[in-house]
Image 1 (cartoon, rainbow, N blue to C red):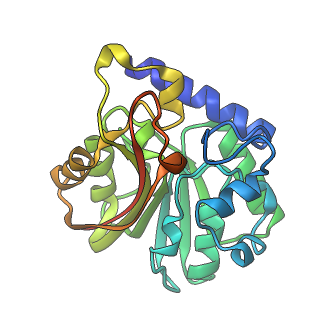
Image 2 (image 1 turned 90 degrees about the horizontal axis):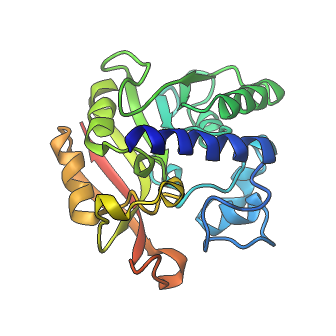
Length: 252
């Protein structure tokens, strides 16, 4: 099942890269078909003025929060973005760490990587790099080299979240921080209830808040805290489940 889900995720996000997500297909309920990816991105908390400073083609409206608002990135830091897509958070981070810092984007979808690299070239970003990788198996980064890891609604796409968090823990420096947005649910699904298409929308793979936090702690993190939360889809239930968007911070 995990291989099927992974292929579906690649297929879904490859399509989004090619279409620019003009049909707002990733986060149903957070935006409607009349919204642009820019509108959807503002809805989930991104700063309008900051969005004007990065390539517009990097804004696809596929997140569920704005972790970069809480990451407190500083000049000269090395930052990694899990599931970097077309590069929105990479470019926003690059502006914050400036030329003395560096930002690495990790994605497993070839179409997204191609789009992100073109955006970097078009925007003359010299302090960013995009690498292909499977975040729950082997993030292509050396141990203890990253100051901050960010991610926006990507961990839920994995089938082994604890493994993904272990990989994040491995690459962070001692004292480094992880700040991520993701979705949690009030009720997890049994294996026979899982739909690969819904998993691609970060729905069927959602854990309860308790289990999600536990998976972070099992990976070795300390000082796990919830920085922000909001009800997803205005409180409507998705397949009988209540979904909540969280921003979570944890320290190595």
